[in-house]
Image 1: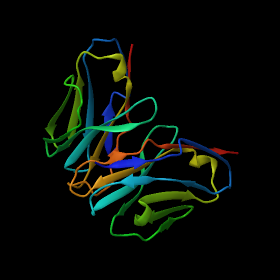
Image 2 (image 1 turned 30 degrees about the vertical axis):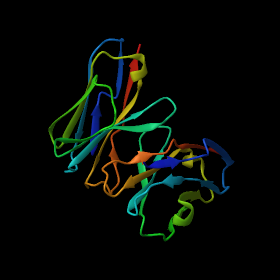
Image 3 (image 1 turned 90 degrees about the horizontal axis):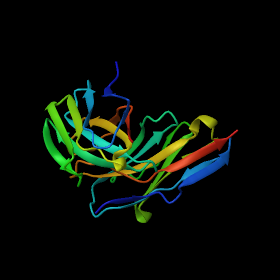
Image 4 (image 1 turned 90 degrees about the vertical axis):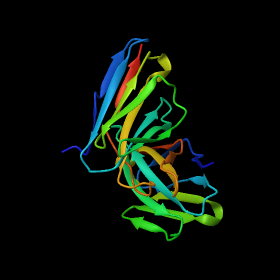
Amino acid sequence: DTAVSQTPKYLVTQMGNDKSIKCEQNLGHDTMYWYKQDSKKFLKIMFSYNNKELIINETVPNRFSPKSPDKAHLNLHINSLELGDSAVYFCASSPNLPNTGELFFGEGSRLTVL
Amino acid sequence: AQKVTQAQTEISVVEKEDVTLDCVYETRDTTYYLFWYKQPPSGELVFLIRRNSFDEQNEISGRYSWNFQKSTSSFNFTITASQVVDSAVYFCALSEGRDDKIIFGKGTRLHILP
C-alpha cells in the first residue's frame, strides 16, 4: 500500500483552466503539506494542515486553495492556471507537530500549463 | 528567519571516490532539526537522516556519514566509495522546533560517473 498517494501523476492543461490535485495518506499522520518544486529543483512549502486546520500559508497566490476534508486528505485546487504554475507538486505528511520528524512524500504530480 | 545554503549546485565524481556535500544553515533558535533528503532521477523524495540541535554526534550509516558542527552551522554529508546509484539531487533541510515547516536548500545535483 502506498503511504502517500497523489493523483494525477501528470496533468497537462491550458492557461486559464482550473485543476485539482488530490492527496491521501494512510499513515495516520495529523499533518499534511503541499510543496512546489520548480524546474530548477527548488522545493518550496506552500501549505500545511494539521488535523484539517490550516497552519501554514506561505504567500501563495489566492488562485491556489487547499482543502482538507479529513486529516487523511489534502487536496489542492488551482484556479486560472498560469504558465508559471508549471511545476511538480509534492504532497507530504508527518506524524509530529511541531515538525520534528521526517516528511513522507508522495510521488509528485507534474503539472504542465500550455 | 531560517535559511539553508547548499553552495555546490552540481558535483561530478568518478565511481568509488568519496564525495562531501556541504550544507550551511542559519537559525536564531536553539532548538532546531536538520535533515537530508535524496531525490533520484525517478523523482521521489527519500528521507535520509534527521539530527536535532542538541545532538552533535556524527552519524554513519553504511557508506553515508554526516558531520554536524554547530560552531560552523554546518551539516555536511559524505558518501564513501560512491556508486552510480548514488546519482541524485540531495537536499539539506531545516526545521525550527516551534515551527511546523521544513525549509529546503536548493539542492546539490550529484553525478557519479562509471
